[in-house]
Length: 125
Image 1: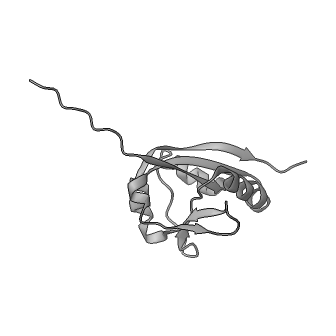
Image 2: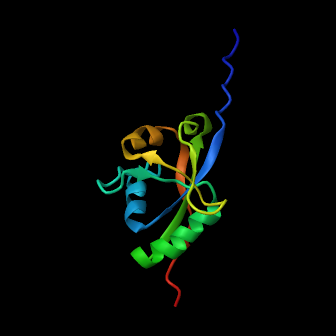
Image 3: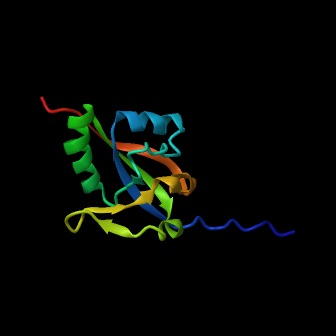
């Protein structure tokens, strides 16, 4: 009797998401496995493709707006991500994916592993 061969894990892509405390609390409530639904005024969910860009947003935007900023990192099924073209939102390294809010549930099902906090920024004193 032959034992079944384990299938190799699908290739993944690392994404980052700058976030504030409210969104992060919802991610924690989802056991660090899903992003919360968008609010009506948020038609797009946009993870970013590099850590430096995520740091700039968390530090320079989330901290003044919310008092704290976080950078999260997560892995996604690379084949699934092919449906979302990379958007250049500024300079050459300002790269995002734009995920329509109504596709976020399916997007979440393709997260591999857990979402993790990799940086926290507080106001400078």
